[in-house]
Length: 286
Length: 348
Image 1 (cartoon, rainbow over the protein chains, first blue to last red):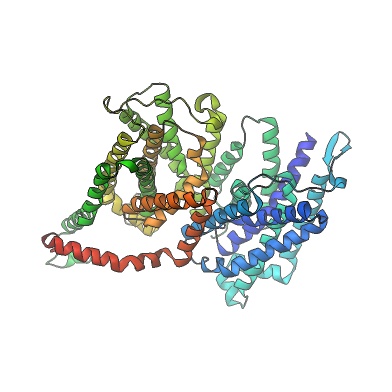
Image 2 (cartoon, chains in turn yellow, brown):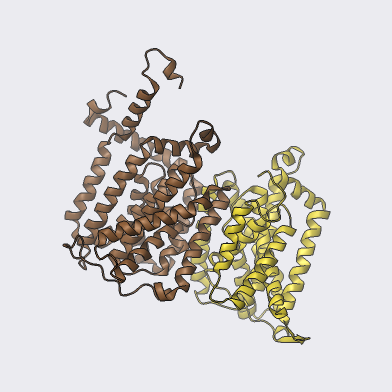
């Protein structure tokens, strides 16, 4: 029971790190980025290449995965995404689906279509048994790392100057621009950080979720759930949504395996009908 | 209606009726298109298998055009209705509930229409993003149900052992796809006529008004919700018929009919051809299948890459700009058509 809770929390934390970049993209620019998972996949495969092939220590590979995805996000944002911000949602959907398809096929070509796992160092394998609760060491690491990151993010958004600029831009981009905030620069940086976090999530999740070229398609719906259920106006909304989703998914798969994944989809549809702006959103004007 | 105030102008109802009739007039190019389609039945017998696929995809794209091109609903899960129709037709044939394909087709289409009716409430509310998520979610839920209820659908192995009876009790489905193509083309044409009638009616006009601005449409008295529900259900029925055709012509249905890729490919098909004039889906289906034929012969495994590249390129160049690039060709064609049939367009 508690083990499931623990696994669910680890999974939820991971989902949060994977999806929080998307929350910003959607909230800030009202941009439907279905290709967010591709950045996570980039980070994951980067780690696989470094750890499994080049023998780089696991912990050293994580920041590299972050930087790799962030750089990729930054380049793509400046080269391609900027042209699509002002377009209709249909164009954005088409564009980002196109990117996903290209990423899937390209990774298939370069890395092969088989599912791969990141080789975890021996000191992270195995479990501790604490009062009957099985605590996976790797999952503990995931929780600690992702928890720290979430805290850091929350602080960065609520306490720093950049954070207040970001919040101002999210609330009303036009007024923010009028006050002299360089919204597009704020956005480029945030997009890069968001992509980087997704990459880091992919690197960490490579062990728990498994990596294969269809990763962005498989988890796209999860990211979207996190964002739509959590709302895009705060960090804590998506965070709570991720935790709920993680625990719900793990518990659902454990207790009612025949029910499968579609409990999650049904819940998502219900939530969207009930509160289209997200469960934890303030009454946003958008 | 400022025109109506002018003393020389006819009464508004007459003017509207005339304008609708004018829009509904058959363009010579349309006639040529369908004559060409008919000709393929006799002239290209060796290509009937791929032509059948094109006809089915064309019908599927036509159904998306009804909701996207006319009513402005973005759907990322249009495969839901397609797959529902496909499984309905498969089950009807497998358990010999309705042996005759055409009747089974109608029943499957009706089933998908009901599905559309039930799920239409879900797309009424919310923004584009909510609609994208909800439609995607519905397709995923259906796929999961089909996957889990293996006793009925065969699960991941697909629905096997389907035997399709002879069409109208006379025409057997042959392995070269001659019967299948004739059948699909006839169904496509019949449903196209219906769709054409629909979009050129006041109902179709009101849909375009809703697409343009739902709030204004509501304030001039268009029942927005009712119209959207109606068109969504009709489009679902069309997609269901397309799915049923796929099952009947291949005698197989698998989970693949619900896949996200199918919905995404469909968007590409419609975008290639252009939205909002009914032929877009058909033309897009022809181009898409031909392209798939050539490209997947070169690199079968990496076909999605080219789909993706095309999508990105189309968006970056701009769909409108592609439209304007083609505009000279269109005006030329129209001018030609007018010269061929001067008396028809003279009143314009």
